Image (cartoon, rainbow, N blue to C red; front, top):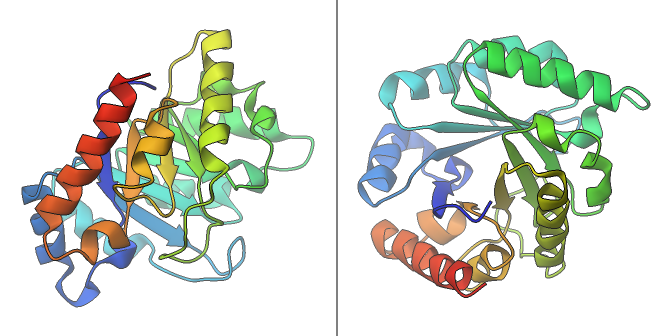
Length: 232
């Protein structure tokens, strides 16, 4: 939250036939983290990657692995993912049991921390940000989705900046300072919109992997976001 801008390219947009080369290329181009999107075909309609690739990815790089679980049963599957030694693991608030959100949030955070990783929670664009108020102090990172989860290449939802502002205001009120991550349609035009309100971890897929130069794309996103952050 208002920390140094961190760029976490989503490998969902990478060339999976040359994934190790792609990881090396984005890190050499200045990426800070590697974002790993897991979709299960239940919580979201798409199916992407899981444990086997994450295990190989961990062997291939020491860079921070930022795992975003878009799955319907995170409590059951967390031990598998944590065995791959990720650095950040984010679950969706919407997957927590009705009436048991606070209890399950604590269980998830405890599991992730016990494995030596940082715990994140994500919100869909139509989930009120206020649902997190009772657990804000638990999380190391809040992920504000700026598209509906399920597919890469979607357009940024303009209301996302206001949602970031709302989350940051609640964090300030509660005197906690998690990282604020935004994922969906982030590029050099949209990154400043959310960084101006406190987003400091930016997930970019197509904006990096479809660019002619990964380095130029990452530098452009970081520069615009840093400038917007400094002005507010």
